[in-house]
Length: 272
Image 1: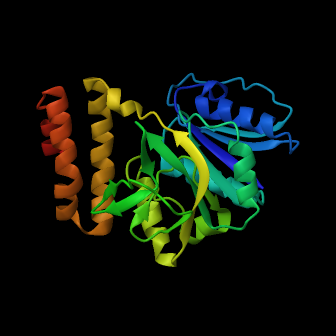
Image 2: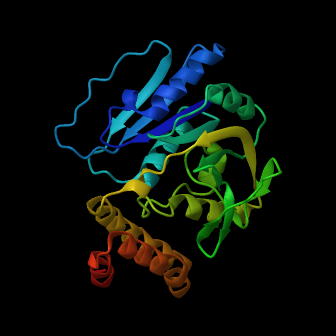
């Protein structure tokens, strides 16, 4: 049995793309009486108090944490609920992912095959962006992926669409809760690779719209401050601060500085 975990932020969950398309794919399947969904709402608005709709065919668990503790905390909370309620698999989704019509059917079938970790193919701008090689703390994209599984060592994937056995999740001690957003997926896979596991590639293609590419300067400043905090946490955990500075930190700083023609990002970096 699969628990689908969706993390939302400042959006009514029943209006977000992931929830609507997941529910639609479940209705197309017509195989199960109920779909099991956990909504972790990171919305930090003080008077945010949702009256959730009633769904006869959804076993729904909803929680709102106004501290906005981040993705890692949300996934760990969802996984703990799954463990306490005897779910075999957890599938993680963000709120902005449009899922294909056969998503539920395919995932349900793969959950019966006893794989440790399954991931979809994520495309953006007509390129495969996940799974990917992971070299020097950066994703290196595959031109063609002519295989249905990859070893974890030297590879990684993004969070959305990941389906993992609950026991494997806790064997890996879950996500690093000190990482709120950036690097949490790669850090998780990097630790998981020590167990000599493979990721099974599900024959599902998800087209992802990375909204940060269209961010305003104000939005990028806000995101960059979060990025710097996660970067320092991740760098300290790897003890490879200098390598991360040249391969990750400096390129991001230069990219944002040039995109917005502003020294504000440099000032943020120096202050940190």
